[in-house]
Length: 346
Figure 1 (tube, rainbow, N blue to C red):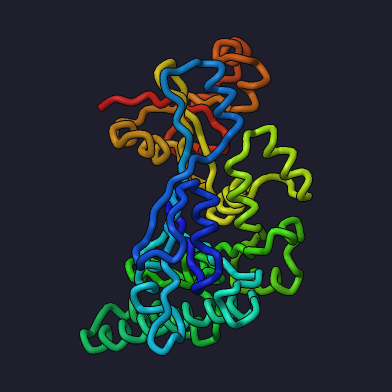
Figure 2: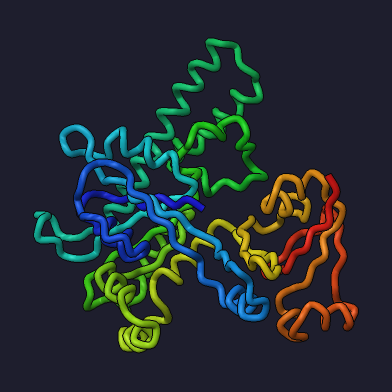
C-alpha cells in the first residue's frame, strides 16, 4: 500500500513522515520524494507467531511517500512537478497546518488549505480530461470512451471529486491510466500544536472532509515523534496522559484500511507466519495469487480457518477434530482474519 503525504509548505508534513516512519529525514530538504515503510501491527499475527514459533514473521506493510510541497509560479498553488508526483500515489494523505509556524507570516487556516487543495486537484483533473476529450474527438475515438470522459468532465465542473461517484455509476476503465487526483482515496491529517494533541476534530472541518469523500483524524506530529522513541510501557502512559486512545500511527492505519476497504488474511507454517493485505470482497483464487502466481494458476481449493475459530480451539488440529475446517472453492470470498492453506497443482 503506497500512500503519498501531501500538503502545502509549512504544514509539518515531513515531521509527520518522520513520526510515522522513524527515519528522521531533514525538514525542508531538497525537492525529491522520500520513502519510508512501516509494518502494520496486528495482535492476531503476534498470537499466531507465538503459537507456531516460525523462523520468520512477516507483517503487512504500509509505504509512505513524503512529497515536497513545492509552489508553482508566483508562489501560487502546487507546482506541476508536485502534482505529477501526487498522481503516482495509490492514496493521498493531506496534512493541514493547525499550529503557529514562526517561518510563515500567515496564521493557520486548515479549512482554507483544505478548500485550496481540493480546488487545485479539481482544476488539474479538469485540464487532463478536457485535453483528452479534444484529442479523442479529433481522432474519432470510441464513443463509449468519449461519453465516459464527458461524464467525468461534468462531475468536475459541478465541483464534485470523482471519489464521490460510485463504481456502479461511473466506469473507470477509460481513464484508469490518467492518475486523476480527485479519484484517489483521500485521508486528511489535522496537524496540531502539542498542547492540543488530544482535542477532537472540529465539526465544521469534519463536515468538509466528508464533502470531499475523505476520512480525517487529528494529531500532533511532535508528540507522535516523541511517542515513537518511548518504550512500550512508557508510551502507553504518555498516550493516556494526553487523552488519546492510541498513537496516531495505529489510528492512521485503521483509518487507511477502512478508507481503502482493506483486510488481512494469514498463512502459517513452521518457516513463516505472514499477513497478506487484500481488498474486501476478494475471491479465494485471486487471494492465492497474492501469495504466488502459481497458486492462482493451479488453484484447486482453499482450506480456511477463521482466526476467531483458531483462537477459540487453540490449534489447527483441534479445529479439524471439531469439524470446523472450511474447504472452499475459487469463488469463496476471503474474510478478514482467515488462516489460509491453498491446495494447487501446476
